[in-house]
Length: 102
View 1 (cartoon, rainbow, N blue to C red):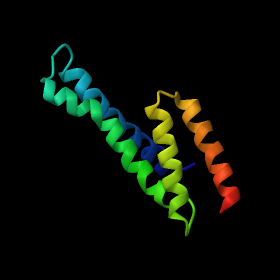
View 2: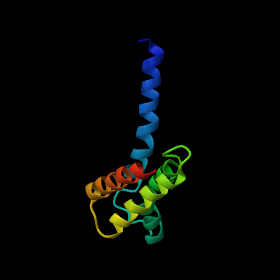
View 3: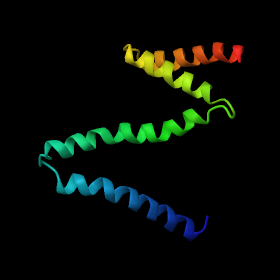
View 4: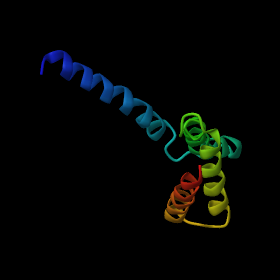
C-alpha cells in the first residue's frame, strides 16, 4: 500500500472525527433549547425512513404491492407493540406466504 492510501485513510478518519468532537468540546455541560433537542432527537428516524422507503417500493421489480404489503405488515406489528425480532420475522413470514400466491 502506497503513501497515498495512508493519507486518504488519515483524511477520512479526520473528517469523521472532527464533527463528532466539536459538539463534545464546545457544548459540554450546556443545555440545548427544547426545540433544538427535539429536532436532533428525531433525525435518526427521518434518515432511516428516507433510506428504507425507496427500497420498499423497489424490493421486487415489477411488483409494487409486494413492498407495500411488507411495509404495512411491519408497521402493523410494530404498532401492536411487537419487538424488532417479531416485526422482522412476522414480515418475512407474511411475505413468504404472500409470494406463494403471486
